[in-house]
Amino acid sequence: MAKKSSSKTESRKLSAAERRELKAKRRADRKATKAEARKQRRKNLWDRVRGATGGSDIVVIVMVLLFSFFGIAMVFSAGYYQTINTASPNPFYYLIRQGIFVATGLLWMIFFACFDYHRYEKLGNAAALVSIGLLVLVLLIGQNVNGAVRWINLGFFRFTPSEFSKMFMIIFTSAFLVRDPSNIRTAKGLGILVLVMGMHFGLIILQPNLSTAIVIVLIMIAIMIVAGLNLAFLLVPMAAAVAGYFYIITFKNPYHWYQRLTSFMDPFADRQGDGYQVTQGLIALGNGGLKGLGFGQSIAKNMYLPEPQNDFILAILGEELGFIGFLILMAAYIILITRLMMIALKARDRLGFYLATGVAVMLGLQVIINVAVVTSSMPATGITLPFISYGGTSIWSFMMVMGIALNVSKRQEPGSRLNRKAVRQ
Image (cartoon, rainbow, N blue to C red):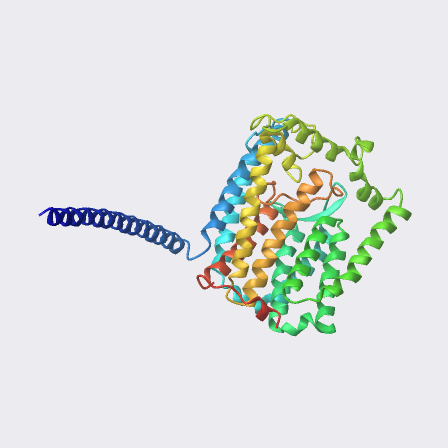
């Protein structure tokens, strides 16, 4: 009887252990089912959002909108004192105009996002001709502002052709290399690319606008590199650039280019001359400290820093929002650039890959150069901070190239990744 009782007890204990194990398994199954359901809901939501945007990359759209609205606020703050210290004060002048630029720019972005990027393969040569034509035209009839001829004045609106040349060169270079991939390896193909590049560089230097000329050259070189350019070919232009720089600083003292290329080394040495804008920008950045003075509280914009809503708006941002605000802005740019590179890597074909790469490089270069200029890390040149600085042409050109990138993202295959070896064939 004792043995039977003992066996029944062990059976009950074993059954209890099995029940606990069964309950644990059921709980795990329920958790897995709920997790899968949440994942599916998120996927369905993401698919609905992508469907609402025509399949375009939603992260790029959101980032562009955030940048644009933040830019409107910063332009309003930076240009406030410029608009009230006039014969006809209008504190909302820059706010309204920048708002119009952004609204029309978004329309441009929508247009280019809906325009099939494969058509650019046939429009590449036309893009180069239009770009060169506009650059020649600006030298003939352009408006001279502060010694620079960069604008064509239409009366109701003036625009900067060199800003659109960045987009035109992305299209031309991409289409040229797609039509005949061997162009990147033949003397004829490279000669045509270098000729178009040199014409743009020379025409823009004559304005003068060194920073934009550099950006266009580097955009074209970047596309050529991802297309398979032998890096040994870059040694000659790099050596020429270094030699030219040292020639200017050695033999051209005290001419214009010497002052422009050397004043950044010690802007305070000529703080009332060529170094004035840079020194005021540095003072504003230092005044902002870690947390900033608060939105709208900048001192430098009160007639100290010239044209604070334009190329040096980063100095006002640093003064009002501090180093923390600066880091957040840079992190946002990195997110957008990274997303553009992901679009490039997932592009369906070489043309999409080249176009998206050019857009990412254009954005990254312009941010780097603007930050370098404001912090006196390179010679002061007129280049805007993307989406933030005041100006219709700059806003439109970036909205247009974002639209091109969105169209590439719309036509990519989900989960696909371009074979980079195939790109170089």
